[in-house]
Picture 1 (tube, rainbow, N blue to C red):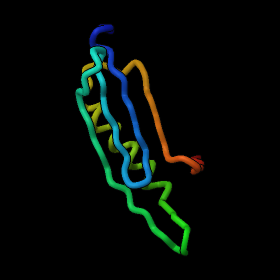
Picture 2: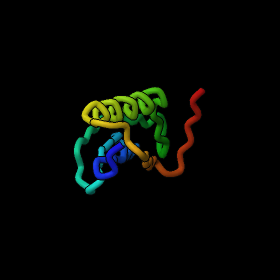
Picture 3: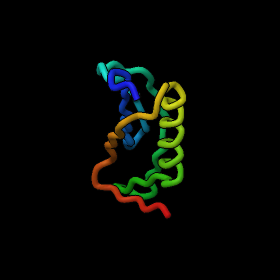
Picture 4: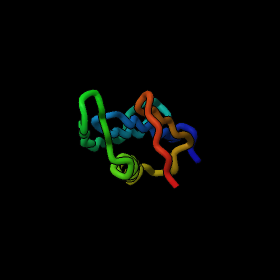
Amino acid sequence: MNPAGASILAIDQGTTNTKAILVDGAGQVRARASTALSVSYPRPSWVEQDAAAIWQSVVQCAAEVLSTAPETPVALGISNQRESVVLWE
């Protein structure tokens, strides 16, 4: 691996969209992707999202930016929605 070319994959999974960026060893953004998510409001003060759609958006964004990476990233950073829990099997 070339340390100067080492990259980091960062994923921001939010309420309305998922974003991913690939940052190189010099701190330059080399690729970015974003996928919108739908939100439903079944009752007043309730908000629901499809866990499978959230997962698919993460996979899609990560795959898009990783397709440009010359090497496997050396690290992964993830931020996600506050006060939410999703369990995948």
